[in-house]
Length: 124
Image 1 (cartoon, rainbow, N blue to C red):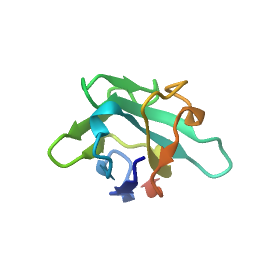
Image 2 (tube, helix red, strand yellow):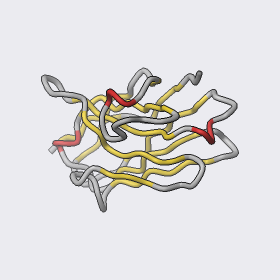
Image 3 (cartoon, rainbow, N blue to C red):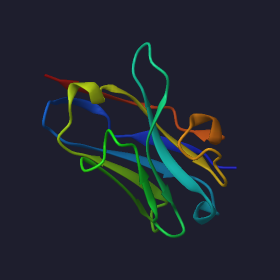
Image 4 (tube, rainbow, N blue to C red):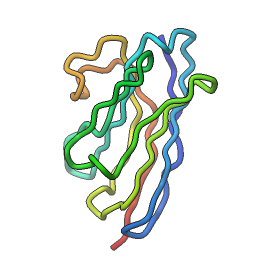
């Protein structure tokens, strides 16, 4: 079992940057795949990025490739999402998620553990 605490959201102008953090409590975090999802008002929760903790292999949604970077710090059990060149359409509640075998990897249905969410608002 794992507990996730995400943070780092805020209000930023278009073109700006934010870094989200997600601290995982699991002792065996290395056996997990962790990801970021986002949900805008009236829309489905959508995949943003994921990272295989053991290898560092990363996955991205096409909409964020080249702008967002997912990473992890083994010493802090913390996952990050560095978001650059933010756009108004990136505005959403961002959630971190974790699962040992997410299937499918890019769908919320693949993940059992979730953070509480952190709001990102990008003004035009």
